[in-house]
Length: 104
Ligand SMILES: [Zn+2]
Image (cartoon, rainbow, N blue to C red; front, side, top):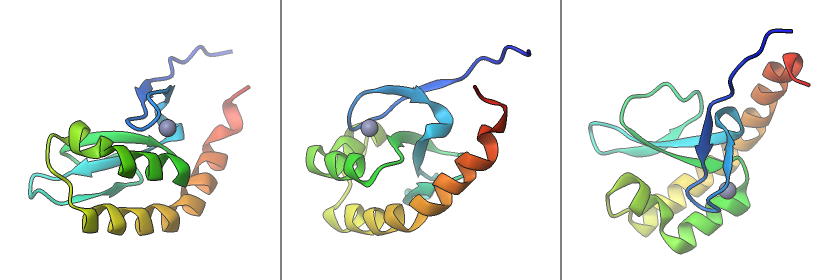
């Protein structure tokens, strides 16, 4: 068996350390757009959230993204992200299933 180091990241809402691929990345692009980066490939400052809407709601309530992205995130941006978050959740879960074959 090949030993692979799993990169851990902290969820900005519940503060739990999780494998990176179990988290959804929110990124602030160089153009100051704040959006969900499902593949984790976009450049910019990133914040990680568990792939659960409950964690997003927690982040919204505690303004965790403001702190993580070092920028004031408006309520309308949180609302937009929440909608996107719900939309990508299924896709996110299916991506995870594809990748989880080699895991115990
Ligand atoms: Zn979380």
